[in-house]
Amino acid sequence: MRLLGRILSLSVCGGRIDPAKRGKSPIVLVAAEGIRLLKVSVSDVEVDGLDATEKISESISASGLHFDVLLARSVPIAGFNLIDPEGLMRRHGIPSIFVLSEEPDWASVEAALRKHFHDWERRLEVIRKAGTAHRLGENGEGLYLIECFGVSPEEALRIVQELAVFGRYPEPLRVCCMVARAISCALIMRS
Image 1 (tube, rainbow, N blue to C red):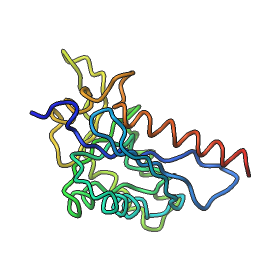
Image 2: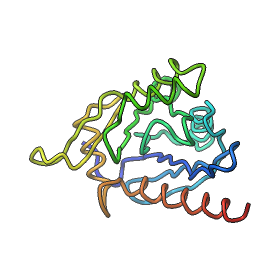
Image 3: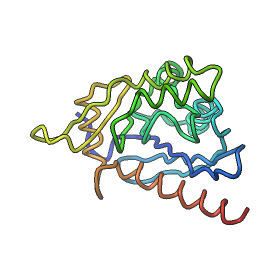
């Protein structure tokens, strides 16, 4: 069993999308050891593109670190740009944990993909790789809604709980999303 300070995580969060402008969206990546932030980097991905996994992979390779886990709030970021958990596991041996804010509405997700993307089946397959959303928590309270790939739901819950300080989200992921929101708000206001 790892101690809190020894979990090396990479958190990923996409910025807000300006509905009036398509194109690129910032994503923030936070490397952390336990709850101690090591590095924050920003990259751009195409809104609704398929380059998020590649950008994350480049960041992992450039870091020179071997991360224990990838943390994100969902598989889709920047619209329907997708984090492919299987691709990251294959390339870097890094499992993925997605800490969701709400239960996925699979019918709506599939309908949106069918309507907007010619490659909707491929995208839906990537989204479903994260597995079933598990409502987990102490005494069956279901405090956390977690999808995971490459790690058991029980281990995912343990990691999330160890890294959560202020609320339900792991601290590195919480900070990552705060930075992503701030950057995207500044970009929207500037344009």
